Image (cartoon, rainbow, N blue to C red; front, side, top):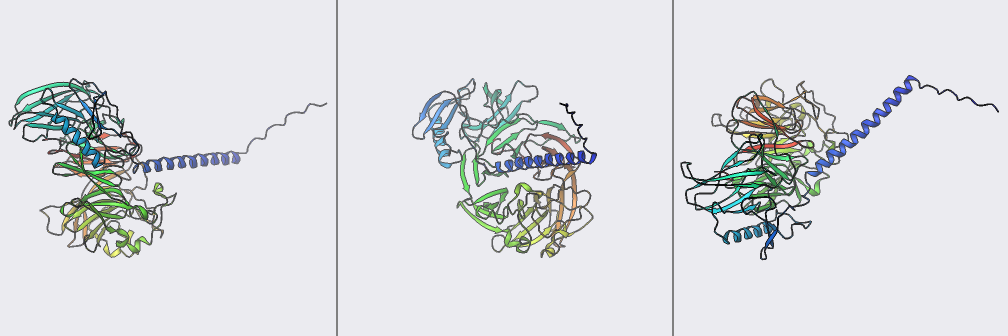
Length: 591
């Protein structure tokens, strides 16, 4: 029997190899894109998710307040003074949250009984970790001193990269000294010196002790990497605070001028969106449908719930201490999202929808559709994100300024409390041609590139300007994308404008427009470039400096009055950071 010879394998032709390579590359791209979409959507869903757990490590149980149903523990961390933890009994229940006024009242009652149970002095104070459960490294201090004395404290840790931190606590002028010590470095042994000082700032008595602060609940890094800029100017005093760090929703981080975390605030999910100070209280979002009023001990004193709505990106002051809130109506999500304005009457506790932007732009709304899987904002696929309003500010007593990312347009609406109507539009005027709203566009005065995808549009009024003129400051993302318009419109973009979600070679800008309503014009009065961020991001004007967050670039910084960088900070996030702002928190935590 003849042995068969193996037939030689046919070599693939060159065109066959190329075809196989193209097919493999296409499969890899499709899989990678699918994974990317899944990751981004998962991260976006994280924004409205409630906190899973409020449990923290506790020390030995030493007592129970039966009336308040609150357990009292020794501190779980080392300390040279007695430090307590007070925790509601039901903290491990699935539905538990500290953002419940009844829970807060029980903790307050327990704290009051602890205060009444002893005579507390500078060297033997009442000390409680985070008595209202809304922070992770705040130390409540209570003792009796002398009227007219201030309380100054200094925090030192054995780390050459972390400078000492000093502050004067906001304790009032009476004999009782009660405050939340903000500044302890999470997870580290902190040497604390408390001084009693007279009106001239001279020390009259002091006490030093060591205490190990609890680790932060989020696990976030306690020191940011910083880079010095070219300005040489001074940073303004205060704490930077984060408003939505993706991967860490449900937290506000407070950093000092060296990038050291000095406080971690725990929310019930979502992000704080904005912080408003009202006397001695802070107002911020605490979940996707609640805004909280929070005192200097970080006790929640009131909650305002928007049943049937989910907040979106911003809220601000309205008339007579009311709040104006951007929101999505839950049962209309299939027809539209991110297109409502609510009013909260904080005195009455009522919530009312006062603007539906579909009523302001009915003709344009009919020219839009839902976001598709292949659109630039694909993570919104299946929703009709037709206008995407991301910022609200007030102008006068009955007008608001809105920033619409989807249309790259700034919008003024007047008579908001009676018959809301469109006043004007600022942006690329060609966008609104043949939409029925072209007559509302203000005329561009000068040769400059319009804003695209802008955020934090802020009204800045000046006594030096005549009536009818004012400035608009904004973070100009300099990014054009639209996922909902159906008429095939494509803009003729200047070379400056990007259409890339991420690009280290591009720039975003801080813009100052001068709006002249008398002439119906707007002009670019000043701008400076900042790290590129296609979406999110913010700018805030302090006394002299600017705080700028470039969210996709994962960096924030402080710039001087000439737009020169003083110092910048890099931060960790799974995709982007929404806003970063700064406050001195005087008459709140500090005096």
